[in-house]
Picture 1 (cartoon, rainbow, N blue to C red):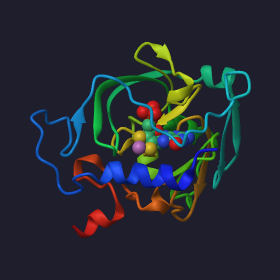
Picture 2 (picture 1 turned 180 degrees about the horizontal axis):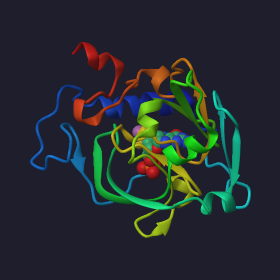
Picture 3 (picture 1 turned 120 degrees about the horizontal axis):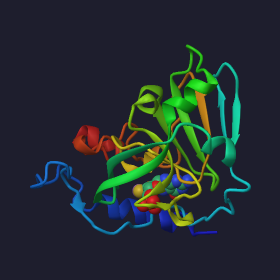
Picture 4 (picture 1 turned 90 degrees about the vertical axis):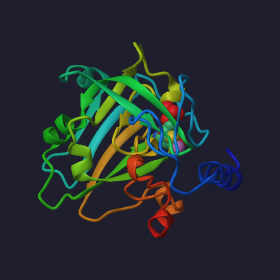
Length: 215
Ligand SMILES: Nc1nc2c(c(=O)[nH]1)N[C@H]1C(S)=C(S)[C@@H](COP(=O)(O)O)O[C@H]1N2
Ligand SMILES: [Mo]
């Protein structure tokens, strides 16, 4: 197990370096305070779950008309799309033009039939990670439950077999090793959100920490 206190304090410290409205970037696709990278760093809690295509399942549950559980084969049979988007990590790196392949989150939600009372979601990872989103964010056209990027199946360290991608929010809103999408009436802050990360997390508004709202 990782040393949680140290890991969390370290990550927050890194993300806070120069925690003030950043300088404008020359490339308008790179948000203020971010630097473009060409590599693909790995950021997570340090727990690699033992999940692969044969034991992976995705459950959509909570305030839905009918709960669904998909295995790898069922997931592959759903309509597949490619969505090219930019990836912004709160620790200040941005990678442009990531060509995620997978199933639109909106298609999955529609299969389960969200109830009118469903306003928020928790994304659950197999490592125990959680993150929260409002349901509108999840229904956005560019939100992908992804199995491949840059021409290859997702590696385990990047969340394979399947992870979530929410391009309009900082990358922590995209749960790796996606296990479940749970819908609720009320907002339930996730792993980083209860530790001070911003609830909404728009990179173009530099919503890194909830305290940024007061800056
Ligand atoms: N299940 C899970 N998903 C996660 C995390 C995690 O620890 N566990 N870390 C988040 C954070 S903080 C970031 S920045 C991105 C990093 O994705 P990457 O490692 O593919 O770059 O994954 C997000 N999704
Ligand atoms: Mo992150």
